[in-house]
Image (cartoon, rainbow, N blue to C red; front, side, top):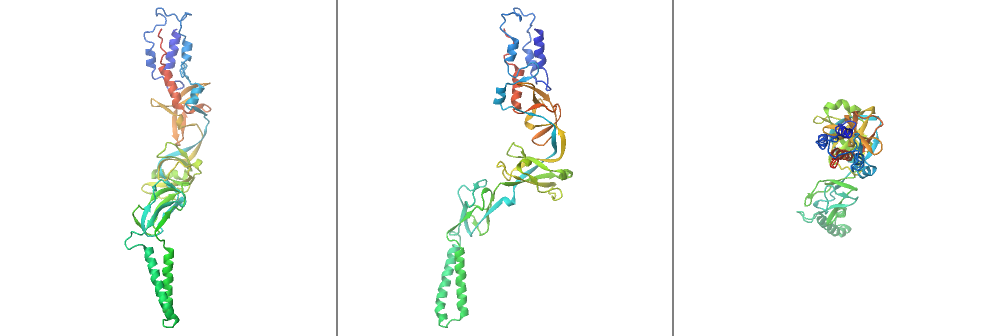
Amino acid sequence: MLICSALFFNAATIGCGKAGDHSDSEAIHDDHDGHDHEHEEGHDHDSEEHDHDHADSEKSHEGHDHSGLIEMKESTMKRFGVETEKINPSEFAEVTLVSGRIEAKASDEGVATATRNGILTLSPNINVGVRVGIGSSIGSISASNVQGGDPTVQAVAVRNAAKRELDRLKPLHDDGIVSTEEYNNALRAYEEADAAVKTSKQGSASVNSPKAGIITQLLAKSGEYVEIGQRIAVISGNTSLTLRADVPEKYISRLSGITSANFRPASSDIILDLDELNGKMISNAGSSVSENGYIPVYFSFSNNGAVAPGAFAEIFLKSGVRHDVISVPKEAIVEINGNKCVYAAHGKDHFIKHLVTLGASDGKRVEVLSGLDAGEEVVVKGAQAVRMAETSATAVPGHTHNH
């Protein structure tokens, strides 16, 4: 059975190419050290009484194939979410990687303001990041503890004094003792004082949200004195956001060709495509001015609920498009001993590994320069599960010739 031994060793030593990665081939070979298939006493592979069948043993190990293929049954693939995609040449955009920030659009913001002078008390649970509805109470303002007293109380006192003066002058005016001019002055003073009372709210005044959304800024604190019209809180509807890409000046020549972008918020591992979020560029090279060595480029997009304003982002600016480019999703790439590999389907329930050379990335997909042919079915989800199946096949626990 020297043929069997040689076949096993050859499969175990194939590298990261169109076969399995058996970096542990020496360990596998060690299992055969001292094992003489031809001369071992009492060992007859041709004997019908021999209870070890090499063919059955090899088939019993999922992921183990001496031809360099990796076996994985359909039930296992479903369990680990293994999915494949047929790779065909398509358009691929040139990419410039920059940093930036996600900002709320001014048209999608509302500001809650103070409706009177006094001491602000924020409502319970009001904080940055809290979602509020339109008309929701953000806080209240009271002037009862303000030095000088409640201005509403003062307005009432002024009105009452004006009313007493008016009542005193009226009979005198009727008798011709007080001139009409003096009486009209008293009447005007009363009307102004009465108007001041009607426009002033007694007790505490509420501060309400002008729109539904998330509080992105609190500009005043509980216990702080505020004046009428002062900004208390900023509320963002978050339905539409702005992506600001800070482009280094050295890339200024690329600005005119930028068409769209992919981006990854700092708090997420998910790459988002502006084209899938109704994104569009709202500034270009002609309308941007350099700021501290960077040229800001702005995009607007619809929020899918997974993005919060204020977050920093990694941005992949897309410009000139190339055609007939072979690319794979980033999730398809597996790094093995410094080499980049992908797994391709090879018949039913089998995969084979390809060493690939990579090019540019747009954040979601990676260009494949060599090692992969158009039309191949590549593992795009669950590649690590296939790698595990390959590793377990390489180790071959139990595949020792103990008799």
